[in-house]
Length: 342
Image (spheres, rainbow, N blue to C red):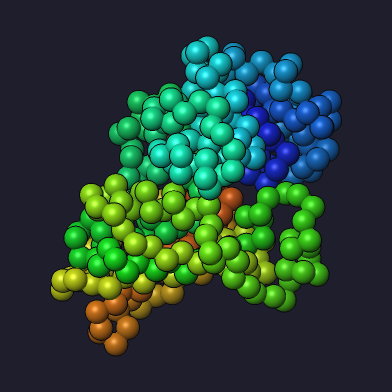
């Protein structure tokens, strides 16, 4: 059994981790931390876990994290970097669901996240946890930087075209929409029901923290810089990411065949039939990315539609997928849940 600890188990990614790990046949949950809720039964906060998770939240100081095989950080940015070195020195593997280790350029990270990095040397060691791109490196890692939700949907959509060398790297556009849960489980005016329901808006057009993460990933694949325009939007959904990606083609290519071949052996990436339009509800609660590719009017622009659940494939599900790779378990173990409909 893989002994698991979770730091920061009271947020949306934390409860999603618990939902998935409680059903995983090879996992033993050892500790779930929360300073504020220490002593409270986990199932009192999250009644969906009654009968499945019998632990109480514990203060991080008292949590037996060093006795775990792996620790997940489902915390705000800036927390994992304060505690990761001590855990690694104790032989514990770490999967960070925040952004502390995603961006390799330390100065760029500090610019976008507005704080000095506590352990910049570990950034170089951290493996970016997008399995469809870095599977073999993930298997050998001590420290995994779990990708963000927008970057997961966008990179999986762009990858086949960039890998094939048929994309104009100077004009990539990612027009992305997210559910409200992407903002986290906190009291915030913009996330209130009366503010977010029956409404639709763009935000952070001048620059979103996921922009350098997406650009970094695509640049590494392309082997040269890319120019990406990324515009996020808030939708009146609880869960879901819909990325509409625009790529100017530089050579003739069979788009459907390209995508089907690239993801033929990827359990969690589903390339839909030609002409399809994936829906966010088709992935709700599942660790899947569904993709469709179009070429409007037979022109030179490819339109890629990529949908994921921001809390599952965009966060906790992908983290469990990475854990499976770390411990030589089948990649889909504990992650075969069928998405919820209606």
